[in-house]
Image (cartoon, rainbow, N blue to C red; front, top):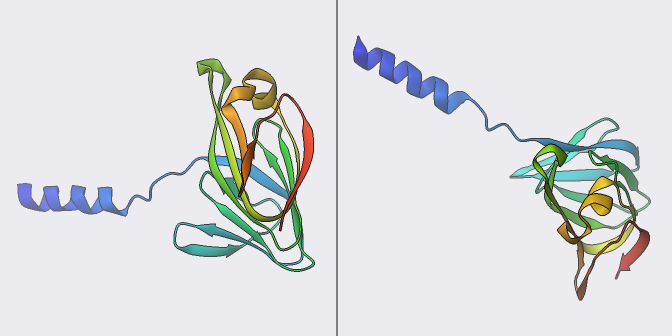
Length: 143
């Protein structure tokens, strides 16, 4: 009986998926935009949630608009490849972290609360450098 109960507990624990925290929402999608999450490729749709470590891929004549939970806004243009490396927004605990990495393409970014409350905890990496912010709006293109 004890072995059956132990086996049942193990099965239940293993069947519970890891709960990933949603950090942003897709507000607009035009064309074909994909989300690479772990080993899955998902087609992005309006109102989909994004998580830390997601990779966004826009195809030709496609773009996506995203609002992060701190109010930051990102518009990713066609033929882009961007990883949301880290995102943590817990103002009550004074914990902030926001890192994006644009491998190719173009992005328009406007910072939210993390840029205001803790600008040193934000970085936007591009192949040959890193962009820091001080409560800004910027456009970056990587070819």
